[in-house]
Length: 227
Image 1 (cartoon, rainbow, N blue to C red):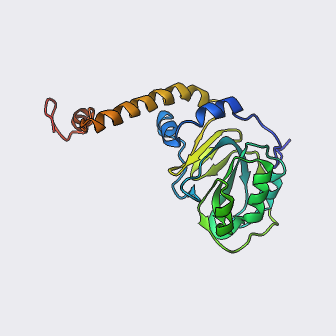
Image 2: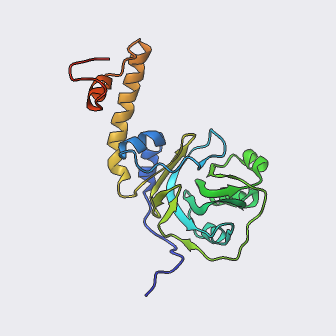
Image 3: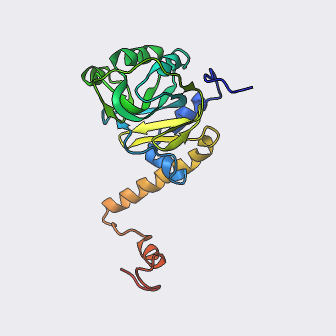
């Protein structure tokens, strides 16, 4: 029996874990996840202050067609992040002010779209978290099938439904649903270490303590030397 194009429900990262993980910058979580999970920089915040965190509700569409996004909006749950594989296409907008108003009313946490949006002046006033590739005034078609609730590739990164999505001005990071909880202690430790390092820098200690060892390892200087 073949897998249906639309998977209506799937396990999601829990609200409790989302709440705990959302206090950390995407950069912190990407670092402790072995520098994995950061989407390509072409997908950026519509406005620099925008942030989001929540479980991925995955949608795959054909370039320039948003039929399956409309279908996904009727199935996604409050708190979900719509994550849309729009093939990086910028020839037509896949979402605009009408759909984003609906997303707000439905209580979604945000939208990540590997594609274009439109109605940017109106969207700026709505202040809903959107991360996209760019904008185009041309509208989409609504004729071509796609998939919902399946693994997708967005910004050159594999994303499974229910994975943890977090985003801010730096970009978007995804962490596997079954991995995010185990990273929280590491994120806490890294945040404390960075705060300590910044405090020491402000006291005048600007030298990177790891630099000489790294230069030796890279063959730039000899063992026992210092820059």
